[in-house]
Length: 120
Image 1 (tube, helix red, strand yellow):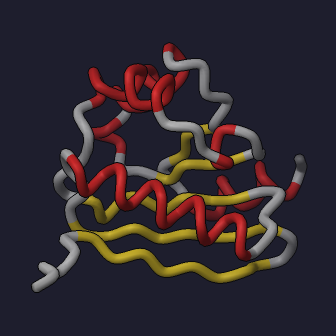
Image 2 (image 1 turned 90 degrees about the vertical axis):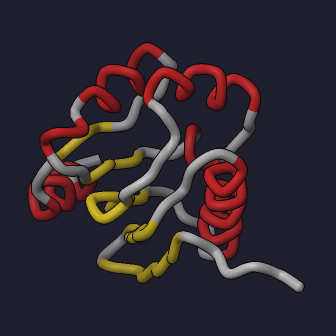
């Protein structure tokens, strides 16, 4: 019997990019499953740009594990212009993503993220 996922993903195409909203908890092996699902959504939509709204994720991969994960998990998300929208108290993920070599831009306001992505 399969257990229920601890996270939920919804997506929509707005203007010229894909918006992905993730809620719930994505820790340990759930994080990898979630990333695989996000990759599938990006590929299915042939996304060239994306916004990831992760403000409602409770449990998540520790920011200290981000570098290891990025280096060991190939993903289309690393190859396209991406904006991450998160809450201010999680700004340590912004720093960790830069150290991991990701070119994502980090925002706390979704409209600012949309404006930035439209300019790319």
